[in-house]
Amino acid sequence: MLYRTMPKNGERLSVLGFGAMRLPMNKDGTIDEEKAMAQVRYAIDHGVNYIDTAWPYHMGESEPFLSRALADGYREKVRIATKLPQWMVRKHEDMDSFLNGQLEKLNTDHIDYYLIHSLVGSSWKTIRDLGVTEFLDRAKADGRIIDAGFSYHGAAEDFKEVVDGYDWDCCQIQYNFLDENIQAGREGLEYAAFRGLGVIIMEPLRGGSLAGDVPSAVEEIWGEADIRRSPAEWALLWVWDHPEVTVVLSGMNEQSQVEENLKVADMAYPNTLTGKELELIKRVAKKYKELMQIDCTGCGYCMPCPEGVDIPGCFETYNKLYMFGGEDRLKMMYVAKLGGIFRGSDTNFASQCVQCGECLEVCPQHLDIPALLGKVAEEFEGPGLGERMELARQLFMKE
Image (cartoon, rainbow, N blue to C red; front, side, top):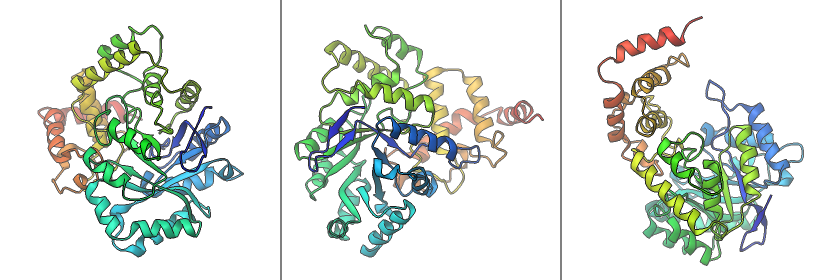
């Protein structure tokens, strides 16, 4: 494992961090604790020393799970990062209530890196006016948190104001070769590093869409490289190539992913990709942007939908149609997965959206989710939906 230094406190953090937002799950939607614990501990045993979680991850169960995963001496081997859910704060006292609750949930007496969660320009002003800087100073003074930071999903023009608004130790931004110039972007990355902040990267694989199966048109471009690498390896190395990056978070939920990411992390030196390789990655990014219809990363911040819509599932299926084709197969998978047939549950169709707007307030990508769900419904729930539902029941509900 390679390590990079946090600028202000001098800590050596593993270049690969374990993100606890996409842990392996059981069919009922709960965390598969046996698999998740084995993966977390395997990563730590192989050098990972930065674990990232947050209050809402896995419907509030990520932090309690980590308290169990980090028992038996593992807590002492890692730095824990978790986050204040600023959108839930109504008054100054709420900040202490959330922090104290998280200390209890994580079964620890301190949080190593405490971040203000998912800031944009307007929410920074709101939480600042509620006294968040005084709260952070107080929590650092009494030892409940060691270092303070923020995660960011806002516009580039507001990022510098947040960076300059407090004596932060670190920040967390979305960054990958598709999102080089959105949100904080490259300019924000460089500015934060210039101001002495450690920079933690989230969504390096864009919710997994840059790894695993890739469209044939993208695979053809990767095939031109002089060195054969997996799509995940290319994407991770591109982020690590930036010397301003301290830690890259990966939301691993398969043992093979953990092993591959650990292997790639051993090569995570900055400024090592060649000009030819960087140009190849630019061509891949251009092709992805031509194929992708919805810029959803599958983070799940929009869930649960009050009407039961599986928003990430709807968008994933829609994107697959345009990236891989296979309309008949995907329409069948749509009704099987979102029609409740696989799980024996209620339907989660895009057409159930009533445009209440709750999802619009929390989407980090600022997508017009109701409008996009309308496109999904039009594509997958047109003529023949009833027949596909019946056929799916026959195929997937046999004894």
